[in-house]
Image (cartoon, one colour):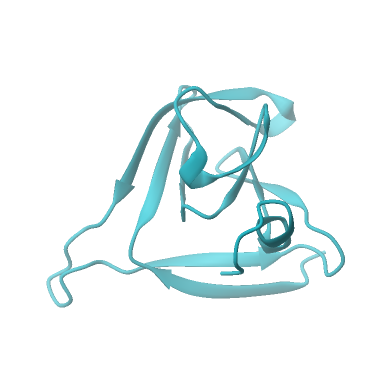
Length: 115
């Protein structure tokens, strides 16, 4: 059950591409479930494999970030959606076929500030 949804603006996103062609765009603080446990997106390396749908392993092929120029501000602003899937404990869901945590996972398991 979705307990809360809100939208934030970010100037920089990480782009994580897997060998199977999945592409995940997220902040560096976003929790991602790898075969070795939960990591912040900024901690992911090409040595990692991300848990995919049906518990498959998605080997990371490339990691980059994006800061694009926009004509009016000098930087493009990206809108990111944040969700809490439960009020009592964090949960994982799938984004672009890859396992990612909600904000409670980000706050409790990954130990970073709430977006």
